Image (cartoon, rainbow, N blue to C red; front, side, top):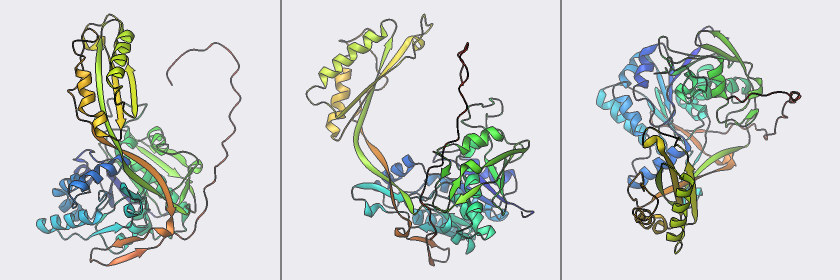
Length: 457
């Protein structure tokens, strides 16, 4: 284990995260690398719709605004930045960052990664992008990039790439890469690792949680922490909760390696310090996941406010009236949901009210448009007492559908586009292993019958 770890921080867990986080992380303590994760599956759909309006769009514009007053600080402190804010257009964002750096007079070497865009292979899709690993990022950093922009990569790739470049790991160093995947998986959602969105939250400490930092070692082990004096907390509980986020078994597959989550050891090392070690890795699967976003059709929603007594009867009346109104051209999908937010003997109208939500979907916009909303409003004087809806009639809006498909790793041509314009092909790992389920551990014998107490878990 090297004496000096690679200190990797996170400043964004989603598109719309705290704008000041990049500056907070740069000024809050020592770092070598900062990562920013902007891409959820929904984000790719949002960016695809942006690009339909403007072919030069398709990336997270907020990252540029964050960089306006922090790029010089990052350059001065020697902190490299790696982000997937490139979305559907990493080349466009890289060019925009270069233009910003030129305007500010900051000599920053900007590189980007291409190859994830497989939209042309999926006719009818708005966006189809492979989840790349960290090898393209590593190639850019090895060639001296100060800032690396990617499109769709796995969230943990923002950490495996810098780690592989810094420590000189080979694609077959599966245990080390798996350790970096574990650290990257903890960092990826930002403040979820430091007490945010945590079941056992501490309200006083979570008012403004700090963003997480991983102190990564050459053997793949790490310590999860945060800058001194920042809010939130890092303990075995917060790290465990984030490690389990979006995982579905002991084998956590990725393009760089398959991480064996059943080998992870977590140890408290002191206040706001949790060590991750013992992580084992295996060769990655031979196929990459591709996220395909398509237009699913059109949707509309009406929320009826039901106040006072006889809530169920009022809901039944509205359902019957709307069913008759929609009978001539019924939408393909109709869903009702009664949300009982009311309470007995309520002191205010709001606390005496329940919400009846009607959601409709159809390939035809006219089937869910103003005809639907208008039919609801026409009931204003002809339905239950106190008729009210939460919003005025709308015309309906398009909705997207996400599908995960798989392609052979060799079919995806990843390229590192360096700061000097050179294009370096990045080959696949070359060593693969098919995924197999890990047998579940034996469950303990059930408790003997006896008295029970109902309580929240």
